[in-house]
Structure formats: structure tokens, C-alpha cells
Amino acid sequence: MERQLALLEKKVGELSLLFEVSQLLAQTIDVREVLQPVLRLIAEQLGMNRGTITLLNRNTGEIVIEEAYGLSESQKMRGRYRIGEGVTGKVVQSGRPIVIPRISESREFLNRTGSRQKPQSGDLSFFCVPIKVGNEVVGTLSADRDYDPDLNLDDEVRLLTILASLIAQAVKLKQELVEERERLMEENARLHEELKEHFRPANIIGTSKAMQDVFDMIARVSRSEATVLIRGESGTGKELIAQAIHYNSLRADKPFVRVNCAALPETLIESELFGHEKGAFTGALTRRKGRFELAHEGTIFLDEIGDLSPQVQVKLLRVLQEKEFERVGGSETIRVNVRVLAATNRNLEELMAQGKFREDLYYRLNVFPIHVPPLRERRSDILLLADHFIEKYAKQNNKHIHRISTPAINLLMSYHWPGNVRELENCIERAVLLSTDGVIHSYHLPPTLQSAESTQTEFKGTLKEALENLERELIIDALKTCRGNMSKAAEMLGITERIMGLRVRKYRINPKAFRPRTRISTKM
Image 1 (tube, rainbow, N blue to C red):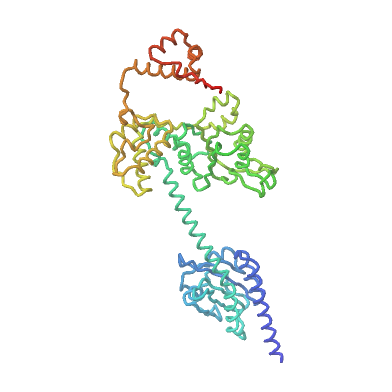
Image 2 (tube, helix red, strand yellow):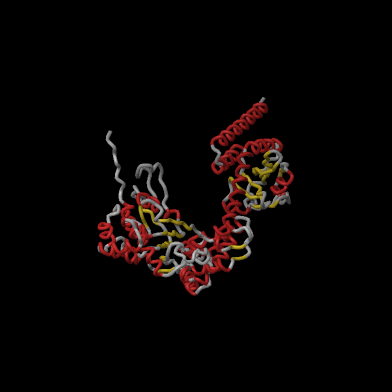
């Protein structure tokens, strides 16, 4: 009777354990929160000294301890196996449980973690069962307990196998998360290296003396923590310079955050830069981090800095000097470690004279100025840039462009490029799309680049004829406006009535033709 009661009590305990484990697993889908409590519960209910859950990384073939009970962090880190190595590796390889009745007598038991050193009170028994999803082994559940010659090992293995099947889906999810995280980390590292390579100064196109000076400035300032002010006309590539500085700096593996100050409304720029608290203004439904917080330990690039309002300039000056700020609607002071790169195409000195830009902020930003030359001052780079853009857009559009015709080259070299490199890039993209014979011809370029010679629209005549034509058109326009009134037309053009009369006769203009017609009504 006592034996039957003991067996019944054991069964009830097992069912209670299975129920509690299932309840824990059902509480959350976050495997980080569930595996550790499950292991603790199993170990405490079954009298285990230690328990571990290992995961198989299918990409590397390595088996690592994901969660453990009774192991230190350093011991967990040492618990790494290859498939087929030790008891854990063999269970993953075969998909079948393994029991070591006495680990002191086993050569298979590696004690890789170093947690089972010379037990003071007898030997230990070790149990390891596979965690399977279908026929796939995703990891193992293992535990050890004090050796007991009367213990039914098969019962222990059976219960652990049931528990392993309960936690299989959670472990499978954890395995996928670990593998996905590693994949993303590898992808991030690869993309980061590509960014470094893409934005290093050697890959900013230009061999002119002006650009070589810029490259030298980038090399000098990149490894420092100095604030840099990049100046130049719109379209010269100021953001590219900022990226080159960041990806060659000591912060290259940290965030690079861009902010276009001109593109954001004045009402939003402060929230965008410094963040806001929930309820700070209408529409602020949650707390939001600003760009400075997102750039912590990295670099923030403030483009078009000359467009900031005076109110935001004050807050920015504080960040530059004190490295601290408060979110909009908040009182908590937030400290950040951010390197600031700024850029502008505006004349900050004129803005200071007009009182639109703070003098103290100007000097705080202008620690290390870099001037990016306009394209018209680096004409030797035009064809290099054109070749680069042709290759880029030909590849994007699956086209084969073999050369630029001589007339097209002449147009590219003679144009003044007010939009700089950005305008050149747009022109080349258009030309690549229009080309049908693998050649960029002059007529593929926009009309703004065309010359009279290339469009066969050369002026035929003399300067005197051109001036007379212009004078005739102005007089006709004035007479139209004044409805044929020669006196008013002369006054509008700033000439005397006599001269107006002489010009009207010279160009055979009929002022009456511009007078309003009189409607004649007939009475019956």
C-alpha cells in the first residue's frame, strides 16, 4: 500500500510539474522570459543540481548553452560543443536520449563547463534528451542529480523527454531568433564595411587641385572630435563630405544621423532634434527620442544649418557647449556624446550682420571649416564625374553606353553648372535614358545646356538689326498697354512724344490698331 501511495504521489507531482511548465509557456511568447523560469522549476521539482538548455546553430554547426540553472555566466560561456562531441553533441547527432549513471566512470562526459569538479557527497548522474520539432533536433535539455542506486533512470528520462517536447516550440523560436540576429549582425557588419569603402575620400571623384585640398582637410579632421562646418553651393556634395568624415573617424561603427534643417517646419524642428514627452503638444501621443539621442556616441549631420530659427539656435548652442538638453515638454536633463557636422550654402556672415544667425553659435560651429568648390571651379573633374554617372545609370537601366560624342563633351565643358554636381548627375541620367545607340549625343542633353551652334539657331543679322527689333517690340507692347495712346506710351517708355512719333513712323506702326473698337447701336 505504501509503495502504491508513493507511486501515486510521484505521478501527481509529475502531472503538477507538467501543468506548471505548460502554464509558464502559455504566459508569454517572449522566449527570453520563459526558458529560465521553466528550467528553475524543473530543477527544483525534480531535485536536480543543474539544468541546461542548449541550442544548435544550423549556420555554424555549434551547440551552445542558451539558458542554465546552477551555472555561472562564465561556465555557461564554456559550454560549447560541436555535433557529435561529448554527450550533448551525440544527443544532437543521434536524436536519442543519453543517460550517464555515474559521470566519474564515463569518458563521454566532458565536463566542458567545469561545474562538476570532485563532488564532496558522492557521484552524479547526468541526463540529456533531445529537443525536437518534428524530426529536427533544435537543441537539448540536460540535468544532473546526486547519484542514487535505487533511482529509476528510465522514469527520469521519460519525464525529461515529455518536458523537452513541451518547450520545443519555445526553443525553436529562440533558435530562429538567435540565427536571425547573427545573420543581421553579419549583414550589418558587411554593409558598414561597404559604407566605409563607399564614402572614403578616395571614392569621392575628383583629381582637381581644389578637390585634393578638400581631401587633405578630410584626412586632417576625420580622426579628431572637432566640429566641422562644411560650406559650399547647393549640389556640391556637402553630405558626401560629411559621410566621408564620419566613416573615417573613430565613431565609424556608431550611428550617422542626418537632419535637413530646411526640410522641416519650424514648429517641428525642435521636437525632431531633441524629442518630446507624451502630451507635450497636440499629437504627441507617446514619448519620442530626438535625433541627438539617436546619434549618441556617433555623429549628427545638420544640413542647411543657416535655416534654423533663433529659438532652436539657442538650444543647439547649449548642446554644443554642455552636451545636454531637455525634450520638448520635459524637465529631465539628457546628456549625449555626439560629434556635430554642419553644412550650409548660405552666407552666415551676412545672416549674422542681419541678426538672423547667432554669432556665438557661428563661432562654435566654425571650428574647422571646409569649403567645397563649385563644379565650375573644378572643370577638370566634369568628364570624370560624367563617366561615373554614365556607368551608374547605364547599369541601373540595363543599357550599354560606350562613349560621349565630341559635341556633347563640348557642351558639358562650356556650361557654367549653377546646380553643380547634382545638376550634372540629373543631366547624365536623362541622357542615358534617351540614348538608343550606345552614345551620349549633344541633343540628349537638356535645352539649358544647348548652344546656338548645337541647335542650329545662330542669330542671323547685325547688332543694329537686333536692337531695332527689340525697340519695335517694346513700342508695340507699350501701345497695346495704353490702347493706342501714343502720349501715355511715350511716358511709360520714358521718351518724348516727338521721339515716339518718329519711331512709330520709322517702324510703320499703326497706333489706331490698338484702340478699342466702338460698338455702334442702331435704334429702330
